[in-house]
Image 1: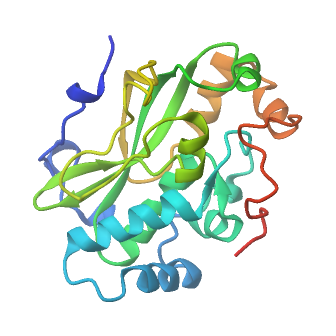
Image 2: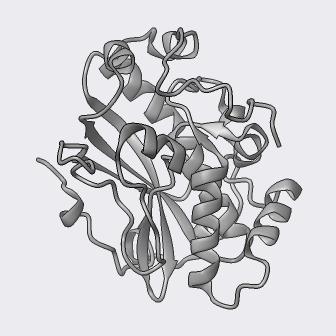
Image 3: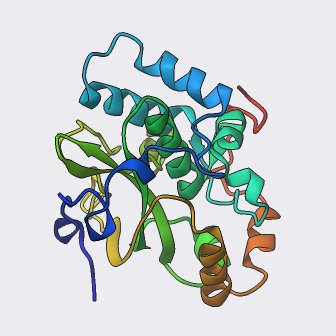
Length: 245
């Protein structure tokens, strides 16, 4: 059953089964919000803010635009998915970017959890579609932030330069409304369609994600993605190198 953006409304429950928010505030191995670099960066980004909403908005834009989206940076090394590693690399696909935003939020006391959905991407590059063999992207990652008594969705995946290249509106976030992918590009073509809700998690379910990738795209997908040739829509020498800080 399709799960379009309109149906993925904000959840007012603190957590699965009405659990409290503690699980969404503490560090985990992937969401290492207690790492000095993560904590320092979060503090610097939110400096001067006075409300949780302001802090959430600042952190969203920091991850959206300071970490460049690269769908080929998919690997099976768990250490590359840790928030501290993503912050150091400054280039990632949607799942590690969501992990980083979750960690930054927790570092400043904002409850945050990871959300996932399968999406049909109508504007992916031909090379990427050929690699996947489908236009359905499983386990697209976003973040849910507990603000004003409810979970608000934030999608920091595509940096603004990439949106301009694809001709799609960059996703904005005001801390009040869900920030989910637009269904249409600026010229009226279909862009992104939510087709399956994968649920919300306090930590990254990496094993399940990689198994799903292998089941849907083939067992060699992760290796093929990391060894891809040039893709002009994502390769840009003006973007920071993976070691940039």
